[in-house]
Image (cartoon, rainbow, N blue to C red; front, side, top):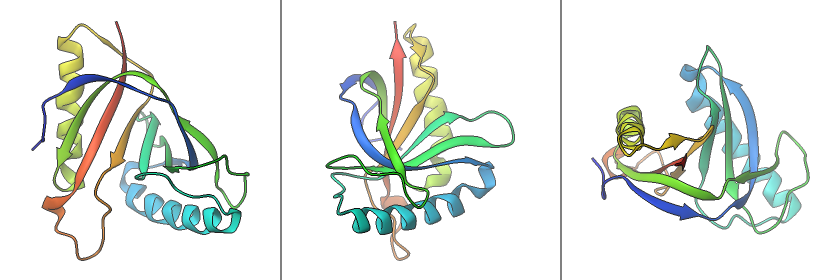
Length: 155
């Protein structure tokens, strides 16, 4: 379920701290958990402050391993250490949609957004990302999770 239908927006580039990996789809949850723990520890060590919600940027989702960056927007650039490095969410025109509910429903919401992009006569950019508006926790109701999807577009 979504809060608002797909629409176009312009997003600014965002400086981030990220952990990059080539991850099998079935290993994503483990990769995310380890990455967020590493990010928290390294940001504390460097005195860098997160400025917003966590995200995952997908560079490639074909083949047995996906190229993924898990990160946080930050107040200044991080130094590369302990698997954490600087990154950036791209700026520009993007199609967006908010997914409400458990993460296992994200695939169908992505399909809906990407189908909408195609029907608008737009071309998808080479990357796409999710911003986790609701921080997951062990006692959270999965139906309460909200995730913003962003697909850069041209045309």
